[in-house]
Image 1 (cartoon, one colour):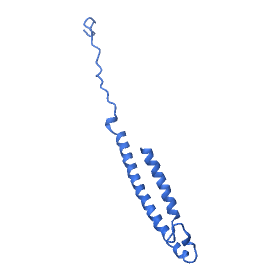
Image 2 (cartoon, rainbow, N blue to C red):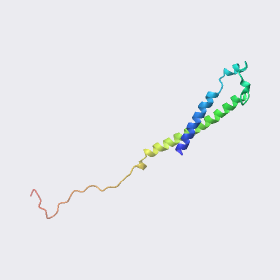
Image 3 (tube, one colour):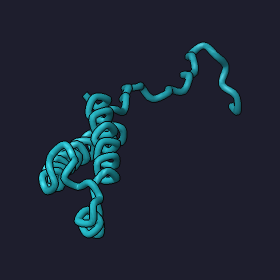
Image 4 (cartoon, rainbow, N blue to C red):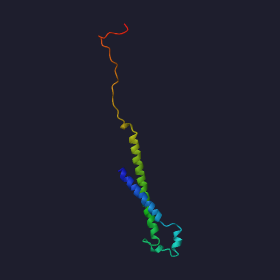
Length: 109
């Protein structure tokens, strides 16, 4: 799931960059009135701006959602990595000292 969201996130970023670069600037309207060919666009003279603006707004909202989703995945992954639940606990018995046998001679007597 993480990989899928990451791929969608990258595709949305590339699409947004491309569509933002295709948009006309504010100064392009003055050039269109002097024969710049603004009326020959696919969406009409004024339709392309509003269509691209709406499309970029939708892509931006989706980009925001995928960003938040990736942040949640990263937080969960970090929490799981540093959690005490993942530490392997083993119970071990303490080391015992060897006992002296009753038949062995004691030193120091």
